[in-house]
Image 1 (tube, rainbow, N blue to C red):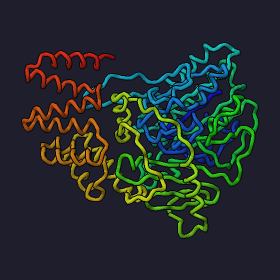
Image 2 (image 1 turned 120 degrees about the vertical axis):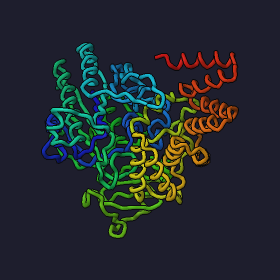
Image 3 (image 1 turned 90 degrees about the horizontal axis):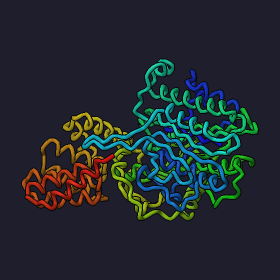
Length: 550
């Protein structure tokens, strides 16, 4: 059994889903041997929660992973790998980016969990490591070759190339007509082909069930969204979902059944013959057809967690797609698949029924979270370098998606999000004055935008506007929650204004929030040397040495 997840892959990026000219010959050929689910959706347009849903069969409100790096999958989860391992299957995972690092809990049940190396941090220049799909595929092939011919297995392979930044060279760029995103899709397709080749080389291809699914799509400018995570339009919710059964059933079928990422566990659980799992949100596609009246849930708390906006959640079925936020919306994906117009005034549907489905989902019991778990701050910085807004560090209790909110809906603030992205580009390029000007206008319209507060504070600091920077850092702390970055910024201000005691207090608090940050430890060493504190000097030198060890 092989599960292949394609990060940041829109359904319509594949020839099997209508892309012409196609850049995915291996996946297109695979689709002709598979059931192609035309109306497949993810649960949320972010990587970690979507994969958690695939491996548990639960929607995010139940497995509790609502954002990248916010918290890890609880140990109380029962994953597909755990079920397979208990049944004596060999289990292994091969992931391509740190956003799926084993620290986030998806390694549960995998005897081997291969991932990119955790690289040392560079102060003020956070990096993340990912690896090309071909390298990940080669690791799977090597592992497969070591299995005995009679050993059954469940393996998961994750490709990340389609996630920005897009850096594919030749011949992929030419094959994609110069489109950088499609060039990366072509790279993934080639690597996927090497997975099939590895199975064929071990005489296992004919007997192996393979499921291919995208974790989410990519905006590519649709609805004003360049990337993903902010909105819940089908440009980022619809994903490829291809199931090739070892017994050949339903080969070549294009199914219009409504399916979801939560269906991965129950489907593969039945394919492996693992017995009845716990109560799930997904349903098995292995034997029984999907009811015509089925609906599926989706959400995004990204705007709420990072931009001072309302949560997005919704329910979609054969009649309509309902989006709930501070402004509600209705769409009909099959009739108007581009979702360019809110059809609330045109569709004759019972909106209360959709809200009731969301309420029923929210009422289901959630897994017990690992409250004692503390994620490595260095890893969190690496995830931020993927382009996602910074982690808040603790999940806390998120509001109901149905709760009344005075915050703006992200779908109404595409221009604000675009301005934040432009400001971020300016900031990273050293154009902090340009970044500050944009962020001030953002905060005029949305004073609670925590992303804008953080980057404006650091822009003001870089410009030498110390009183202004201090005021913005204090506003960010008031919006909450407390982050080490804010404390570091205040510490730097107090050092420059000749207040070493207050600076030391802020550096110490920053260290409590982020014990592995070398910059913070170096600042504390600097203060100890200035004060002639030998005991503190020895302590900080020792901690710096430990933090810098690979």
